[in-house]
Length: 170
Image (cartoon, rainbow, N blue to C red):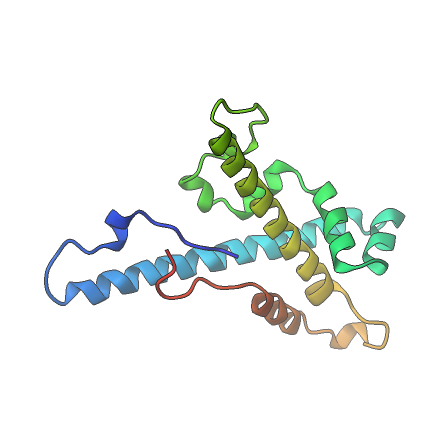
């Protein structure tokens, strides 16, 4: 989900000697840190949305019935641009949030297509994190005692469902 794209000037080490391995390790560490911060904010947002809509019949009905796709489509209707900004805050340090969520049509058709694709990616990735948080962390099965529910197991399942940046992603 989180692909770390850095300029070639950052990825290519300009110095000499053994510092090249350290440079690569620093880039990998930074990518992992961005992943974990984004993942944690997605879990928090999922819990917040579940808490906000838990008493709404429409919300409970949508999450009980239908396919995962229908559930994701429902969750997307509840997401605001501020939610996406919160989850992907690290990414919006390099891509303008206003650029992505400005609804005006760009003069450059290719630029507008790219903007819409990025917007769709960020929205769907956020919806998937919320969906997985609700289903894998917060939802307690009817055959499971509430006191024995282990959210850490669910959190691990959400993490497993979320691709991490791999060494060399760029």
